[in-house]
Image (cartoon, rainbow, N blue to C red; front, side):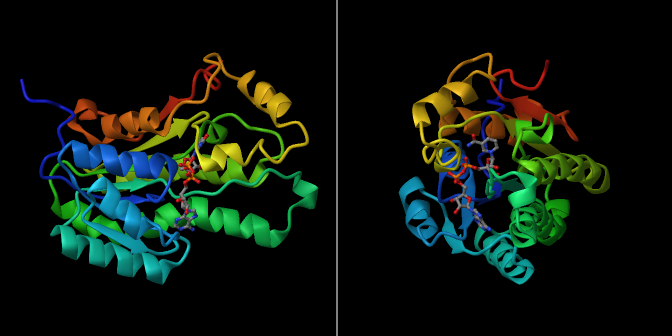
Length: 250
Ligand SMILES: NC(=O)c1ccc[n+]([C@@H]2O[C@H](COP(=O)([O-])OP(=O)(O)OC[C@H]3O[C@@H](n4cnc5c(N)ncnc54)[C@H](O)[C@@H]3O)[C@@H](O)[C@H]2O)c1
């Protein structure tokens, strides 16, 4: 029987690919035979692309519609089409709503919600031409069940979940799914407790919300993105799949 996780011949754009879940996804996808374009606002993405065996590293801000349109066009030209997109670029903000500035709110929504919109909109013509095309939006458990002091983040991720479901209807038979992680050991996660007065106590408090009391590795998260991109999930679309160590189901 064919390996359902094989990505040979697949051409995939991964955003947020310079770090964390995006980087681990790009690396795993290359190992599974895909050709991968990596997009990130961080210039290191070009070096990361070389390190993981990606085809091209593109520097761009997903909140910038023009930059996204150019990057998607370059990626599609370099890969000779596109049949997969993974939207992993994202930012976090832990702040009471009354202390949040409109600029902070707008920036967070622009990156976490409008970013995937710009990418999917630009990639849709290529995805529609491909057979068995997929989109995976990396949302969050915070898009399913709220977290205190994360109004903008939770709103952006809940919006991304509903964007995913609506897009699945519009782009079918392209499969569009969301992955909702819990805590993954990346710079984004670490910044949420390392600057607290007592980081160890804050980490214990965070872990207390989870049934599996550890942060997952980016590689474990990438396996779920692979599942949603590969034939292993061939009849799944419009799903928000929690891979969140058991925080959100109860
Ligand atoms: N780490 C966790 O615990 C966790 C939990 C739930 C959801 N997530 C989500 O997973 C995704 C990946 O996060 P991560 O943990 O790998 O974080 P990370 O900080 O390690 O990686 C995020 C990457 O996105 C890039 N990025 C940020 N803003 C960008 C922009 N405007 N344009 C282009 N690139 C941009 C960063 O440069 C970075 O390389 C995010 O969407 C995040 O919200 C993470």
